[in-house]
Structure formats: C-alpha cells, structure tokens
Image: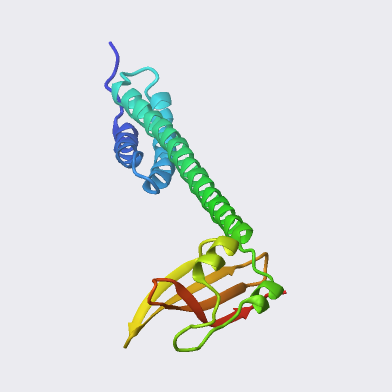
Length: 199
C-alpha cells in the first residue's frame, strides 16, 4: 500500500500555479504570471520527485496547472504581439494611403494652376469700385479653369466676387487673387488683382 502524498510543496506549487493561470490571460500582467509559473513548475517537479513512491495526485495537478499557465502566457503574448503588429501595419498603410492621397490631390491642384507672371500682367484691371474696363470673369475661368476658392459680398449697390488660384508648386507657394464686380448684365469685371510667387 502506498503512503500518503507529502502535500506541502504540491500545495504551494498549486497555489502559485492557480495565481499564474488566473493572470495568464491579462495583457502585461501575464508577464508576471509567467514569472510566478516558473517556481510553481519547479516546486511541482520537486513534489513529484519527493512523492515518487507515494500518491502524487496533488503534485501532478500542480504541475499541469503550472505548465498550462506558462503555455497560455506564451500563446497570449504571441496573440497580442500579432494584434499589435497588424494594428501597426494598418496604421502605416492608412498613413501612406493618406499621404499618397494628399500628394495626388496636390499634384492635381498643381496641374490645374496655369498662371504665369505674363498672364497675370496681361489681365486688365478696371475701375476699382465698378470694375468697368476690367477683364471678364468668364474669360478668366475659360483660360485658367475654376478658382481654388470663391466668395461673394455685397456693399451698397455693388456685389463683389473674390477668387483665389493657388498651389504649392513643389516647395514654392504661388497664388493669384482677383476681385470682380457684378455688372447690370450679370457679368463680372475685374476691379483688383494681386499675386505671389509667379515667375
């Protein structure tokens, strides 16, 4: 008949193993769980050796729980690491896609910007209040395309349209700002112009 199992080391190993097992699923805490599982495993092995000719039920249970805790820690670490890698790759991909989209849209704006210093100088500016004698808005749009931005305001009897054409054009900012005044026949005539960075 076998002797009863010596349980002190097995119980300590079991308690440590259970603590390690409970924390093995929690991110960051599972690092501590692995450290706790190592002495639990060692104590369980020692308990098995001490009880080699006795009943070993508690020692075997503590050994299995310790090994299980360590395995879960390794599995969850791998799982969390893969999740972080995938999230990092997704962020990088999104960031590159956004940068590419911004660069692409900037290239479109750069291509649409057709202004030169000679074109700007050739624009005739009319009366500063009425715009009479100035270049026609429709002619400007037909030659240079739709402006980057446009707004209107009314003051007294006059309605003004403010338009901007701008681009980064590589590393240099270029812009053309124009002001048109609405006429009785609903046309718009140029009353003011300014530019920056044109060659």
